[in-house]
Structure formats: structure tokens, C-alpha cells
Length: 166
Image (cartoon, rainbow, N blue to C red; front, side, top):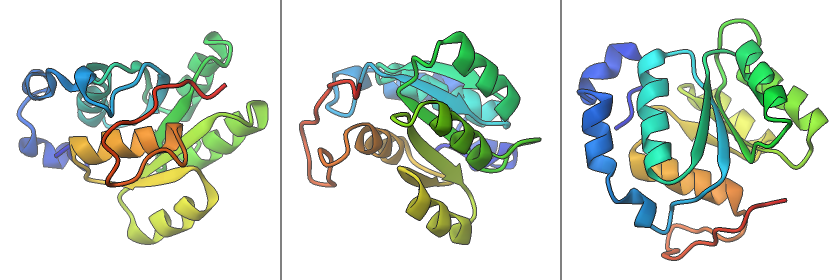
């Protein structure tokens, strides 16, 4: 389980142990080579989740808030396939960041993360997807793949497309 916040950190001992659990994920059909901009203000959650995503073959850029994420997005000249962001961030919200980046790049995929059930229902209806905290490695990878390959992923899918959405 990837923890909900730093207070739940005891559910995963270290990022290195998580990486050890994830060895071989890149051979999994949920793996990909796309670029993900991951925005999370909790350092431990940001570190563990990025280790999991990198182990799955994704290129991961990380930011601790919306301002840093926007700068990173600009430095990448918009070469980002998925914005994976917590909704609740210091300063500008993850949702506001997503709206701003989508105006600049309408084809950008967005997956929001929230620990609030009601917020999840509202966000899921207005974006490419929403992920509830805490989440397992499997749920994270399936949801990322589902957002990147809409229509190509279902719970029963065993082989997923790897094409970039450009």
C-alpha cells in the first residue's frame, strides 16, 4: 500500500524496500514508457510512488507543489503524457494546475489523487480519472495505464497497448 500521508508511513518501511518489491514490473503489461509529471506535497509518498512508476518503465518528473510542477512542465516544453497530481496541495490546488495545463495542452491526460470520497466523485466526472488514497501498487499502475490508453484497459485486460498518445 502506498500511504495516504506521512502519518501512514509505517505501512511501507522504505522506498528501497518498495523498489525491491517492484523489481520486474517493467516486464508487466501495465508498464509503459510515457512521461509522467507527479505532483505530491508529502515527500515520502512522492518518493515511494515515483520509485514504483519508474520501476514500471515510466519517465517520472516530480514536484512538491503546483508552482514547481508548472515550471517543470515548461522546461519539458510540454513533453508530458500524464499529469498525476494530488488535489490538495499548498498554494494552487492540483485541480487548478490541471485546468491550467490542459488549456495549454488539451491532449494532456490528467489523473487526480484525493483522500476525500466526495471530492473523488466530483473530480472523476470532470477529468480523465481519479485515484483514492491510499492505493496499492497494482491499482496505481492499472489506473495510470487506463488513463493513458482510454478504451484499452479493463479490469480483465492482460495485455495492454504501449503506444504514446500524441
